[in-house]
Length: 329
Ligand code: PHE
Image (cartoon, rainbow, N blue to C red; front, side):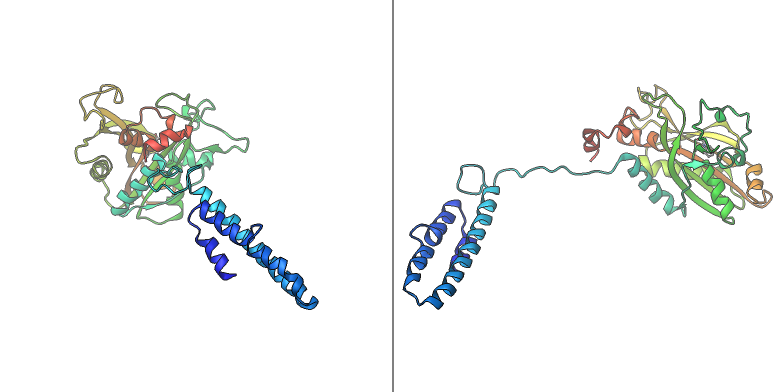
C-alpha cells in the first residue's frame, strides 16, 4: 500500500501517473483483484478486509487527483514534460510612491543634522493655521476661495507651518524638527498645481541661530537630495510668520541650469519658502525672543519629486496609474 502511494507521489509525468492508476485502481488492477478474492474469506474477515481495501482506494484516488492537478499546473497544455526554460508568470512588483520616497530621503538627510520628525493634524484650527502664525484675519489666504473651511469652523491646513506652533507649544527650546504632511488649497488643478499636495516643514530654534545657518542647511539638503552639482539661491520674499523671509530655489536638475520647459527657461526651480521665525510667533508660543531665535522652511515635496524623478505633471502623483508607478521602480 505504501508502495502505491509512493509511486503516485513520485510520478513525474501524467503518463507515469496514469500507469500507477491503472496498476492499482484500474479494472484489472490490484484493488479489483483484492475485491474479487474477498468472497473466499470467512464472513468476519470479509467485512474487515473490504473496509481496508476501500479506505486504500480512497486515499490513493485522492493522492492521484492532487498529483494530476500539480502536474497540469506546471506543464504547458498537451506536452508531457516541464519546460524549465519558459518565462515565469510576471506578478508585478510594487514600488514606493515618489512622495513617500522623498519624505523618507528628507528624514534621512535632516536626521543626520539632528532633526527629528513631528506630525500634526490635517484638520486644523484657524488659530494654529493662521492666527498664531501672525496671519491677520483679513489676509486673503483665509478667504473661502483659497482655504477649505469646515462647518465646525476648523479648516484643512493650507500649509505644514501650524505644526511649528504645535511643536513649540508642547516643547521647551531648543527644538529641531521636520514635519512632513499633506496640505490643502483651493487651487485649480493643472500641471504644476493641485488642491492637495505635500510639504516638509523644518523648524530650528536655539540661541544665536542666523540666516546663514538656514542657508547652509538648505544647501546641504539640496546636494544630498539632488547631487553635488545643484546650486541654491535665496530671493527676498514675505511671509507673515518669518522676518526676514526668503524663497529658496534650486538650480534646475533637468537642464543643469541652462534653461528648459520644466524651469520655464529660468534655470531655477522654486522649492521652499523660508525665513527667520518672527519674534511675535516666538512670543505667542511662550518663547522669549530675546534669548531664542530660529529659522523655518516649508518645501514642496511634489516639486522636489518632479525634478528628482523627471516627472512633468503633478497630476501623475494622484492618478495611481500603475504604469507611472512602475516606471519609477
Ligand atoms: N508655509 C509657507 C507656504 O506654504 C512656507 C514657509 C514655511 C515659509 C516656513 C516660511 C517658513 O508657502
